[in-house]
Amino acid sequence: MKTTNVMIVGVGGQGSLLASKLLGTLLVENGYDVKVSEVHGMSQRGGSVVTYVRFGSRVYSPVIEDGEADFIVSFEKIEAARYLNKLSKNGTIIVNTQQIDPMPVIIGAASYPENVIEEMKSKGVNVDDIDAMTLAIEAGSAKACNIVLMGRLAKYFDISKELWLEAIEKCVKPQFVEMNKKAFELGYNFDK
Image 1 (spheres, helix red, strand yellow):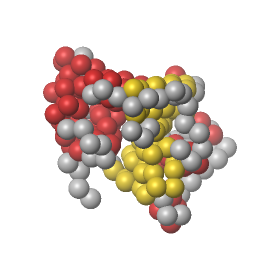
Image 2 (image 1 turned 60 degrees about the vertical axis):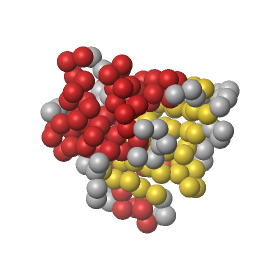
Image 3 (image 1 turned 90 degrees about the vertical axis):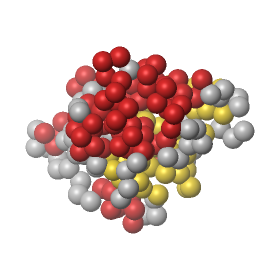
Image 4 (image 1 turned 30 degrees about the horizontal axis):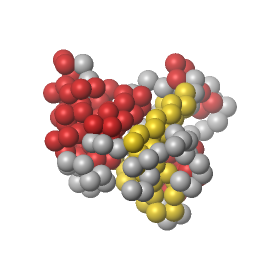
């Protein structure tokens, strides 16, 4: 079985670590060999946070090199652009359309790039853009963006939706399970 490479990228505080825990739990419980590597930026200050998840019949390293990511799940537009070099030529990047200004933009030293998603598409990148924030709020909390994005990623996997929902039950505090299941469903069923 071919090794599949997934990168989860975002800004500190967006829940990328829970997303990688959910994905890792799902894959291990379905018989895959899984390697997860968390590369933390300045997460407490809104810095870039990256997690590598690699799975297959036998995986020897958690690191994803340039051009090897089959999927990049980006919690923010500029983070998608930042890690585009990691995407394989046939890979897919799932992008939350939310904009979170990095510190240079906040202090006025730089401006946020315009048309980030459109530029990626114009380069022939397979971009699946989704307004995860609006869907998360519909599910009950803006903090559920991460699970909306996992629901979107699930569409690309040959693992049943029910198994994903079971993994949510194992990874999320009981009081937040139903909300997160709704967020997952909204991402999974999203139709442009």
